[in-house]
Length: 380
Length: 140
Ligand code: SF4
Ligand code: SF4
Ligand code: FES
Image (tube, rainbow over all chains, first blue to last red; front, side):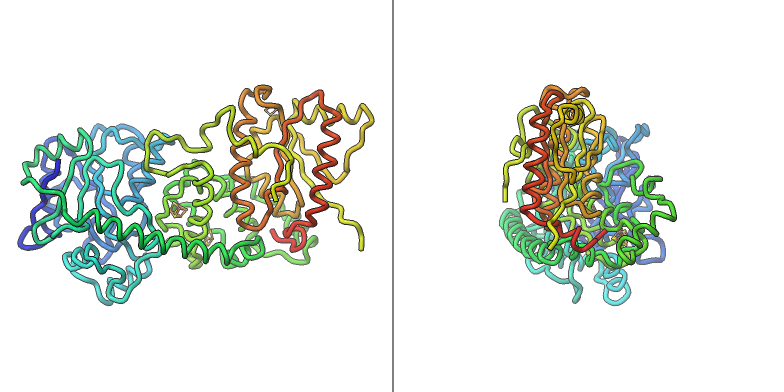
């Protein structure tokens, strides 16, 4: 089913608000989860909205991406609430949420997942500068980012996570909002992808739409461009971190704050081993390390932490870039993790968030597999 | 120059490889003392972080060894170990720790002779590869 979200007073932003308002006014939907501009500020944060009147501050499409909302949607859905919530997510947020569903840390039982062609994002520090200096109006932003020429934004570069994203289009959702290759002056296109989506969308009585003529072409262009950028980025970061010494140098400003872990939507452990007594070393331990090596940097265990995190979660990395965004030391954690994720995901032919029925690689095993991992034949 | 004496950390399963090591000992077979055995209840309990820690602390090689497929006393611990080693063999070489420094073998409880042979071969291989970058740079 393919219908149209019409503009309101020639504005796509208002048309979208109207669409969400109609959704929230439906009997079947109790709440909406989507980005909202907070009162008297430039901050746009994911919010749970129950009053349709408050949707006038909703900003469904913007360059603000302060956190990956998969974790928030997990909070809203890990147990039944007795409420039906429609949730608007970026594609990398949906993919991360699907990973959390696999781990029983979320459920789509009471949710209607709404996806969208990704409106890209600035890093949080760039967004703050952009919002201060030269923000586009919401409509101008939509026109810009869904035009054919959307490489920069008023002189700001989009986040490298977005520029290298290989899946900036919605999957695994109930309803999709399509924007690439759409003639926005004629409204936006919204599709139902599941039966649940069909039921909701059917009730809204929106005018029918035809498939946006140029969308496939745009998807191809974006995929190719991003994939080329991704390969270049991975080559560069691999070159800069291809030994443990170089890796230590890459993290030499790391203060072990663990923000990168806390904001990673797929770092799934309830309690991280790096927060346990295992890493609460005895004073004498530090002295012994220092004596062995002549000196030791504190806090310790930095490279150890990052390598362990890679081993635990890189198979599920969705490449959202939020680890870099959260780092107070301005370390590009995302680039490193994405380069490792490419290897571990290929090894297990795993594509996080694309198929709800695909089991995470470390949760399954078979009798006959990876047999050349065993034994002592020389490989190199 | 002094000959290179590698440090090799081996996580061995209590029920199979550790018993094989015991048997090798009581049969008076010798194997290189460079290999330091750490007894674990099952290869399935070897978290990737143990292996990472060993390498970061300067190990030249790491071995995980347990029961043959079908013989694991906890039914499938060795299959889980195999996936984790597969994973580490992707991650560690990315940072210059060569694949062959990390080994997974199945050595049954009665394979005392095989145990001594494999330990000798692994030791020879690591000597041939030379010291690991982490030993040389004392990087933690
Ligand atoms: S490691 Fe970084 S890029 Fe990957 S999912 Fe976690 S926060 Fe996102
Ligand atoms: S967020 Fe940055 S400083 Fe904090 S632990 Fe991660 S890499 Fe280190
Ligand atoms: S008990 Fe030996 S590998 Fe599991």
